[in-house]
Image (tube, rainbow, N blue to C red; front, side, top):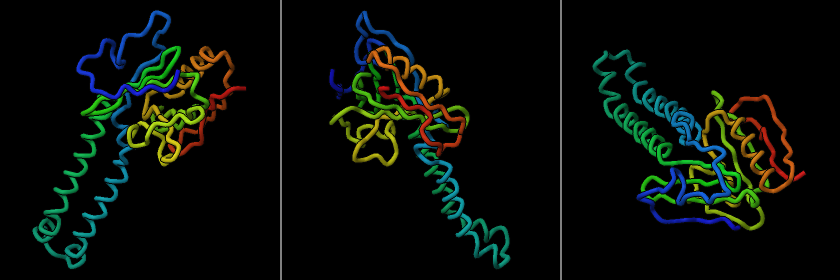
Length: 223
């Protein structure tokens, strides 16, 4: 079974997060969506944007602060940059919120299904037998990403997956379950489902680091 892209919009889902009902010999192991706060921080870089816009506001206000001008002069110096900064942050947060609401990840005993898209909904079927590795990246609060390495020449365009894709892997995109809660438990579900589907044991290397820049905490690959 090769990777399948069901690339049209679904106005009705026969089963939540799936383009069609599962066959009788397939069942859902885990299903979830990105956490909006974790997604906003990790994929949309809202914290960095807050810092950036804060620097812009400070730069605009600095001449008035340095000259000791009154409160009115200070307000006039930032009367444009503050509303523009807030508008930009609200737009980015709204995009993150809409992405989290419309994205559904489903792990079954045979495949991983990614339902993506805000306006045009598409579903990607990733058979477990076509996955050679799964790397875990820990974020704050127990959230994290699980990036999937596909076998052989199987590729999905980076732009079609974003933000559900590993950052900066443009030439060899890795579909990623982004900003999911209790990531280590979900990784264990993926590992067990992969082992059951392939009939091979997976190698796991669990690390205790919780940094958002931590190295992969789980390697799912044939022993």
